[in-house]
Picture 1: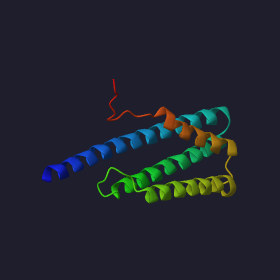
Picture 2: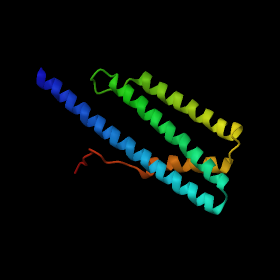
Picture 3: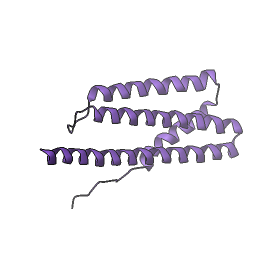
Picture 4: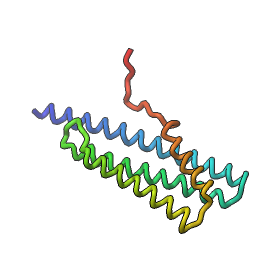
Length: 142
């Protein structure tokens, strides 16, 4: 019985390490791509685009961080079963969606940032998911 408990803890530890590694990699790629895009737009357009691009990218970075946190909660609440608590997962998806809409509305409406700059940062940060594909802990079948 003790060996089974140790096996589950080892499996969870490996899963958490892989999850943390992947989330960190995605966040770093997002930050890097957004900063590079902001600098390029600042040089090509104006300083106004720099701030707007950083803001648009920050929306997705905050969204990714929040969803990663909610996903961790959903997997930890599964009571040591190899499943995910779907209610917590959907709650995270819904709140993430609302958060993005509210932050976009704040940036465009209240802060009056450049729409093209916000969307540039937003899109580039989303592209980071594609650029940061992780193979941490994954083995390929032959």
